[in-house]
Length: 408
Ligand SMILES: Nc1ncnc2c1ncn2[C@@H]1O[C@H](COP(=O)(O)OP(=O)(O)OP(=O)(O)O)[C@@H](O)[C@H]1O
Ligand SMILES: O=C(O)[C@H](O)COP(=O)(O)O
Image (cartoon, rainbow, N blue to C red):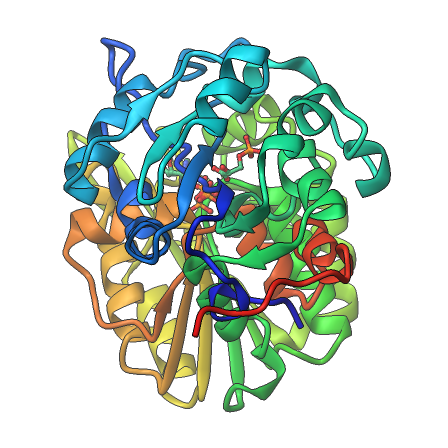
C-alpha cells in the first residue's frame, strides 16, 4: 500500500509534486487542451490549502517532437485553474531552481521546467540508480517530501518518477490514489468481464489480450480499430492493399503472426469484426468480411453495423467492460459511429472502465459519458489492466520507511 496525502503533515512542508500534464500543443507552441491539468487541481489545491510549499515537476512531449516545449503556458493555465499565482521557472534542478524552491512560503506554488529537457529524464533506470541522477541529487535536498500524482506516466521508470521516492518520503496524490483504487482491483470487478481493444497501438493491445486471457481476467476480447484489422488479416481475411499497407507502414506487420497465435490459443474468446466501413464516393459504405477485399481498395476505417450489433449483444451480458482505443477513425464524422455506439453501449454495463488519454478526449468530443471510471492514463492504464505492477507505484511502495505524522 502507498501512503496518501492523508498520511502527510503538509503545513510548512516543501513538496515536489510530479504530475502528468503532457498535453496537446498548438501551432504556437502553447497548451492546446487543459484536461490533464484539470485532473490535478484537487491534489494541488489540497496541498496548497493545507499550507504546503509546492514545486510542480512534469514532462511535456518527447525530445525531437513538435510538442517538446517548455511548461510556461501550463503554469499560466494552472494559475487560472488554482485561482492563485503560479510562477514558472525555466530551470529544474540548478542552483537557481533550488534557491526558488527553498524560498517558497506556505501556500506558494511554482512550476519547474519540463523534466525531459534533461537527458537523464528520458532514460529508464532502476530506482536506486535514478536516485543518483542530476535531477534527483540536485533537487531532493530542498524538498521535504515527494507526491506522485502522475498516474499516466507511472509505467515509466524515469528519475522524476522512481528516483525521488527512493530518497524522500513518497505519497500518492489524489489522482494516483483513485486510479490505483479502481484499476488495481480489476480482479474484483463483476463477471463476465469483456475487454474492448481498439485504436492503433497494436503491439500493446495484443500484449494486453494475451495477458488478460492467460490470467483468466477476460471472458471475451472484442477487437476494433487497427487492432481489429490486424486480427482480421490474421484470420485470413483479405482487407485489401490500403489497410494492409497502413499496417505495414506503421510497423505492425509482424503482429499479424502474434494475433494468429492468439486466435489459435483463445479463438473462442476473441471477437473479430463482421463488417467494416470504408469511404466510397465520399460516403460511409459498409462491407461484410465475406465480401472483402473492397472493390476499389478502400481502407477499413471503422467497424460496421453487424459488428456493432454483435458486440452490443456480448456487452449486454457483461458485468464489467474495459475499453481502450477508438473503434475507428473517430476524427472523421462518417467513421465516428463505431466508437460512439460501442462506447455508448458500454455505459450500460454495471462497471465500465475506459483507459487511454486519447480515447477519453475522443469521448468528450463525441459527447459520450456515464462510465464508472475514465482513466487519465493510456499506457499506464493498459499495464494495470493486465494486473502488472507499475514502476513508479512500486517505487512509492518501497520508498524510505521514514514517514511524517499526518496533520492534526
Ligand atoms: N481503422 C482504423 N484505421 C486507421 N486509424 C484508426 C482506425 N481505427 C482507429 N484509428 C486511429 O487510432 C487512433 C487512436 O489510437 P490509440 O491507440 O492512440 O488510442 P488510445 O489508446 O486512446 O491512446 P493513448 O493510449 O495514447 O491514450 C486515432 O487517431 C484513430 O484515428
Ligand atoms: O501521455 C502519456 O501517455 C504519458 O504522459 C507518458 O508519456 P510518454 O509515453 O511520452 O512517456
